[in-house]
Image 1 (cartoon, rainbow, N blue to C red):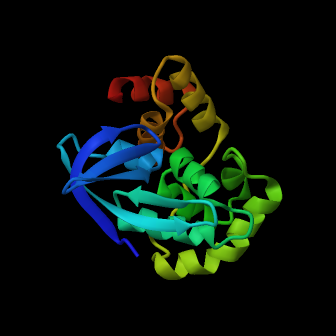
Image 2 (cartoon, rainbow, N blue to C red):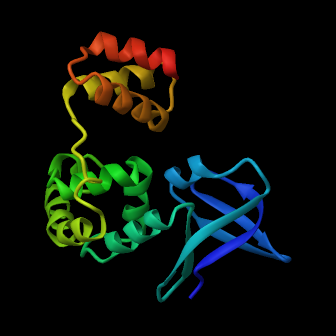
Length: 193
């Protein structure tokens, strides 16, 4: 019903924003991924999805159309509501979710808070063909999820870095240097954060 909203960003929180469109303030739920992409300027455009339930009408906003489409796909899975779908998009980058679904990586999906083994398997079963059809196979590249990556991210979090930023840097390092040991990954990440 509402495809996008373009207006003045009046309020910005990690989970929601308020956008003023010619005097009407729209309260929009967002993921941390979208929060990280929000521009510093006052003017903002979000692609939206209106979720209508018996007791509420909720508007969800996304900086990227692809994130909105992934959100809609996640909602189509039995057992995944808007809250869990938003948590998934806040915990992992949309490309990581697509890669995990495309590669059948149950562990990555299950690592998200609120998702058990059965739900993770259902997500992969229900969405794998759709994800592979929508996204070129070349886009779905396995990101190596190994203990070095997890330990490096934990160490960087302890040092006070935001996990989302640290993940991007660590994944880039691991892509460039697949054989890097834990110490090298952390040192490189500290230089780039």
